[in-house]
Each structure stands twice: as structure tokens, then as C-alpha cells.
Amino acid sequence: MIELQHLTKRFATQGGTVVALNDINLTIRDGDVYGIIGMSGAGKSTLVRCINMLERPDEGNVIVNGKQMQDLRAADLRAARREITMIFQQFNLLMQRTCLRNIMFPMELAKAPGDKAEARARELLELVGLPDKADAYPAQLSGGQKQRIAIARALATDPKVLLCDEATSALDPNTTHAILQLIQKINRELGITVVIITHQMSVVEEVCNRVAILDNGTVVEEGEVQAIFSHPTSKAARRLVYPAGAPQAEVLPGHKLVRVAFGGTQTTDKPLVASLAIECGALVSIMAADTRIVNGQTLGSMLLALPDDDKAAAALEYIRNYPGITFEEVNG
Ligand SMILES: Nc1ncnc2c1ncn2[C@@H]1O[C@H](COP(=O)(O)OP(=O)(O)OP(=O)(O)O)[C@@H](O)[C@H]1O
Image 1 (cartoon, rainbow, N blue to C red):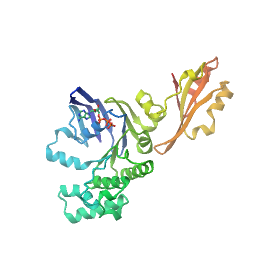
Image 2: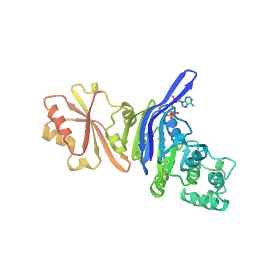
Image 3: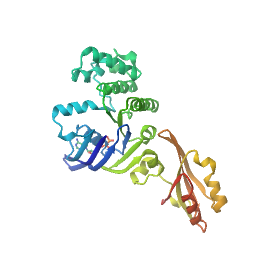
Image 4: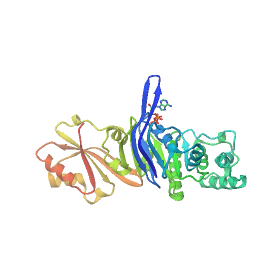
């Protein structure tokens, strides 16, 4: 388990002090694939670098599997970092070493016997799907293959936690999907807790079970991915979940805008829009509709324009009590 308690990190710059993280409190449970998402400059990289003490927090505690990370002495910190490994957007492979020797590198640092290190490295090449690239150099690989080698290297010390800092941001959508599948496999089959830093909601949507939304150095929303997707409450979460923004209320004068979110199959039993017309006499217009797969489950959302007349209150009450959906009024 990773616990971040009252974590604050400031940087002194020529223009003054930048508060990169401001009183962050988060718990990441064993086995989670935990997303940390936010716009550029929100503090994501600083946060993840505080978990393994690549950055030292100014205030607060980082506790990983019961250990206070900032209190560890150098040798203990090196040992802890073997259990909390990291992959990066730019892969950070050693260009003069073959793939096999890149993967062996952390085991060499940990003074593992050479034959064992090589055998383990070959196993990891299998695991990441590149058994034939042992003798290739990183320059001979595609971006996705480089990230697979970086993942194999990160797994070489049998970590408990894998930190991924924008690990798919340099990759095309198909390769991103393949790497996310590999990360999910590692999580499920090896039981490794994964923390994914990203600015892409699609990444969170595909693999994470929980997410924290970071804005300007603070956590503005945290929870199950599906709950946040179906009912984002903070401005930052809405910006990420509805990047195109909500249509303005003035688009249809005399109407209320209502956003509903539902599990994809739930509407088929009893269609909401038709039911509103028949049972409440409310003739709603669908302004926008979207279905997405979130963490393996279908999630739909619709933006409805509801005539603001004498039937509106009853219609809103009807929507509020409709099974299996969440709803909110949208004010422009
Ligand atoms: N070493 C540093 N010195 C000074 N300021 C820094 C340093 N590292 C980060 N910052 C500042 O801290 C804030 C958070 O930066 P951070 O890199 O953590 O954000 P981010 O969410 O990862 O952004 P991006 O997605 O663009 O990488 C920014 O205002 C950044 O300029």
C-alpha cells in the first residue's frame, strides 16, 4: 500500500516559489491500477517522483508498504527502489547495451550472479513478447518495443510497484493499447501495483480502477474510475471527461440541460427518453450522446434539453428516481 499524507513540494525558481504539490492525501491499495491524471503542470510527475524519493517532499509523509520513505538511509532507499520501479515516456534505455544487457542491468547493480541474471532477463523478454530481441540494440527497436524492454528491465528486480510516467504518451494509439494491455497483464498475473501518470483520459479509461485528478498541485477528485466518469463534479474532472465542453444553455432557450449517465445495458429494458415522453409528457431533445468503455464496462452519457415548463419538475423527479442512472443539471 502507498500512502501519501499531507504531501507538499515547493520549487524555488527565479520567478518565486512554485508550489508543485499542496497537501496531497492519497491511498493506493495493493493490486490497484491507479491513474493520476491532470493537465500539463498539474504536478503529476512531481507526485510520482516523490513516491520513490527522486524528489524529496518538503512536508508530509510517503509510506510504502509500511516504510516511511523519507526516513530511509541510502542503502535502504536503494533496496526500496528495487521494489518500486519506474518506466518513462522516453524509455531511458542504455543505448550502448543490447536489450538483454539492459534488462540485466538492475540485477548487476543488485549483485545478482551473471547466469541467474541472464536467465531471468530471457524470461522477461518472453513475458514482454520480444524473445528474439535479446541481442538487438535499442536503436534498432520501434517505440513500442523500446517500452517493452523498459518494462522488462523495470520487472527485473521483482518489484511490488510499477510507476509509469507518461509511458504511452510517445506512442501511437494501437501501440498505446498494446502496452496498456501488457501493463494490465503484469498487474493481474504478477500482482504488481501500478501507478499510471497521464494527461490522457483514454488511458485511465482503459486500464485504471481508481483515479486521482490533479489540478494545480491539489487532488480535486479521487475515486473509482467509473464513478468519476459517470459523475465528474470538479471543473478539472469535467474538462477531462468532457473535453469538448457542454453545449451552452442558451442553445435552446426555455430549456433546462440535464446530463444523465448510465451503465450501457440498462437503458434497453426501459428507454429513458421515450418513458419521459409517455409517463411525464416531457418532450426532451438529445443534445449529445456518447458511449465509452471504462475499465471493461460500457458507460453511456446523454445531454438532454428538457422544456422548462409546468412538467419540468415532475420530469426531473422522474429522472432522479430512474434506476441505474446518475443525473445532474448542467448550467451552461
Ligand atoms: N525542478 C523543478 N524546478 C522548478 N519548478 C519545477 C521543477 N519541477 C517541476 N516544477 C514545477 O512544478 C509544477 C508541476 O510540474 P510537474 O512536472 O510535476 O507537472 P506535470 O503535471 O507532470 O506536467 P507535464 O504533464 O507537463 O509533465 C510546474 O509548475 C513545474 O513548472
